[in-house]
Image (cartoon, rainbow, N blue to C red; front, side, top):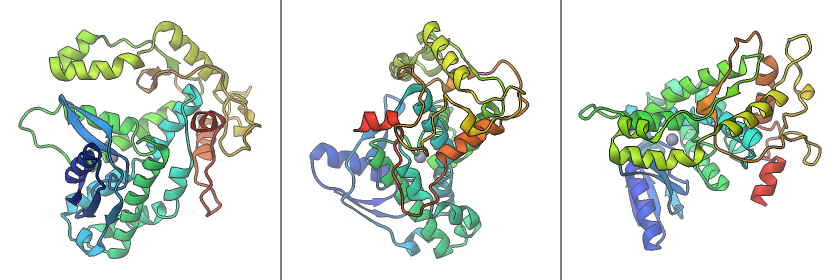
Length: 337
Ligand SMILES: [Zn+2]
C-alpha cells in the first residue's frame, strides 16, 4: 500500500494496510501533521473521531523541496501539531502521577534537538526555507516515532486534542473545517493557559464527581454521535468516592511550604520525579482510574505556583545528556515491563 499525500490519505492507507495485512509506505506531500510514522490513524466513526490502531509504515519519504512548496496553511498546521508537545507531556505526566498510567521520557528526548530551532525559525517556514523545513519534518517524523515507541498517541495527543475533537464534532453543518494542526495548535494555547492556572494555585485542585449524564451528551451531540461519545466517557466517569480519593492524593502531594511560599521540588515528598533513580522515588499510592482533567477545580485563588511549575518542568524537561535516555518512572516500568 503506497500513500502519496498527507493526513487523510496517509491515515486511510495505514488503516487499509493493517486490515489487508500488507506493508505500507508513504511519500509525504505536506508537512501538515505528525502521523506519518505513528502506529495509529485518526478515523471518524459514527461522527466521532477516534485514534485507531493502524499499520506502521515500512518507509516514509520526505522531499524538503516538495514539502516547502506545499500550501502555507498545511505548513502552519504541521507547526500547530508540533506545539502540542508541552501540553500533551504535562497531561500525560499528570495521568502518570495521579492515576499511575505508564509514562515515558523517551518520546520527548527524541524531540529535544529540533524543537528549539523549529520554534526559533518558525517564521521562515512560510517562505520556503529548507533548513526550517528540515526542523519541522524531523519534529513531525520523530513525534510519530515517539507515539510508536509509547504504543499510542499519548506523547502527542492529550487534552488539547480532546478539545479539538469536540470542536470538530460541534461544528455547524456547512461551516468549513479547520485543518487538524490549525485547530490543535490553538487548543494547545488554551490548554497551556488552563494548566498554568491550575499550577499557579497554592491550594490543590478539588476533583469533582462527573456531573455529565447520558441524556446531556445525547442532547448535545445527537443520538448517534452522542451514543458513541457516551461509550467513551462512561468508563472514565468519576463517582464521589473516587473524586475524594483523587482530591486527597492531590492534597497530599501538592507542593507548598509552611509559610505558604513556594517549596522546592525536593520538598514535595508525594510527588515523584522521573529524573531521580528508580527505586528511590516516593509514589502516590492510589490506584489507576479515569482522567480527571476536565473535572479538576481549585476552590481558592493562588499566590504562587513556582514549586509546582518547577517540579513539573524538572520532571518533564528533556535530559541535558544529548543521548536520549529512556527514564521510566516506577509505575511506567511496572506497566511496560
Ligand atoms: Zn495531532
